[in-house]
Length: 611
Image 1: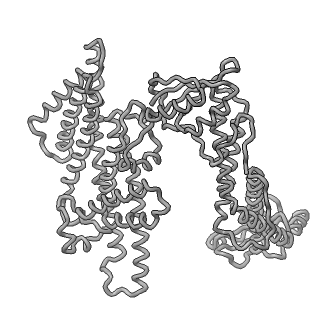
Image 2 (image 1 turned 30 degrees about the horizontal axis):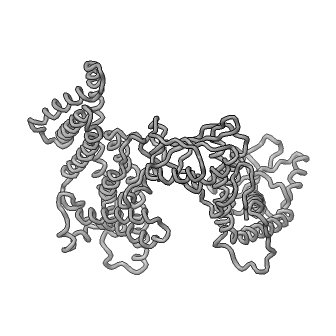
């Protein structure tokens, strides 16, 4: 990235901002934080328009033949936005009122439509107090003769019970039913009136759904106005005559920026950034690596400007972790088919990513003999020949090997992290420290194997710790004071070793969660079809199919949750921690006009076309 400082006259600032927006490569950093409230108003307009579009989107599919309806027309989209939001507010309040009225009507349906609340109030004045309760049958039956009670016929599993009391303090220690505010006839009339009002509101919103495209364009226009206002208010000022702004551009766009600056007679200065922590991060990977972008955007993390881009390492490891955690070829096939059916609703990157993850899952499932958790399917001649016994899900005791494989994957994964740092610090003595950490990682791997699996550590294993510790102690910290830097490294080493040991052990979750997914699938199969499908009638087969669908659907959901928790964690914490990536960066967000109507004047006070 390059840091730019741009100067323009106050007289031409509007056109400058417009041209920068059309260029769309400058990530503008705020210089002046003072404002006059215009920015807040622009932001509110964007939010209100977005809300109006969201309201109308709910009515797109509800729209029926409206030829005979009275149409509402607005001359400008702002007027329509306000009308839609006001109507939605009326609809919500009307719905709440209608729900309250229906609850009051339910009261009358329970206690009798001829009951009059004023009669109950009249009895209270005469010293007769009626307390109303809806009780479970068991509770109603347990009430003794201490009180005067009238029990009405059961309704919806509840027994309406009336307590007749001679003093106001006499009550049952149970929830008392409150009295309605209106009479039954008034409630019926108000419900009819409110339903007609809500129907008109629904019709209005359905009619206006045809204006969504118009509002979409207006929304883009408002976003442009907001961006232009942000750029204007963030600019510095020199005696009211000059305006200047600071920003960042990718190195590949410097020529484009210079060409626009020269043609518009701007003053500018381009240099390398002085403060890396302030520089936005612009990552442009090849298409085959870019398929991991949806996951990175979902977890909303960006490496720092001077940190390593982990996209390719994340992609490879995530595909392996996904395959091991789900581990079922049948589930992988479902992901593949669903993605194909929904391909028009998914972005290109998301489609390819799911295809890759599905393919990896299918391969792992075939090699481990896991097809919807069914041992019978895995035992079929052709499929059985494809199974690798050491990682098979059924029929063999391979727990020790799978734990060994998980630890091995962890050691390799962390070795790659430190290997990258070796090349990162290749011109520094810190590279030797990372070589030492590679030795320590494999020493910790051997210790883990010994403690967890009972495999004795080879005699030469101790030298991994000795050599690694010496390199880490001597070369971890660059300092003029050699002994001080070595003391700091030695002080941190014990905790770092404990952390490294726990990191390697953490990879056992790949085996544990994958085994649990297969076990849960097999359990559902055995519970629903303990003796297979032989002798089952059509009804029983249908019921079994529904039960299997629900059971495996739940298992798939749990497996995907495990991927989100464990698959991402191993990349973001264990791997990134050893790689020294803290994800402290801020994504590159260039100021860019997005509305098709970008030939308008600027937002600094002049008008912008809206229709």
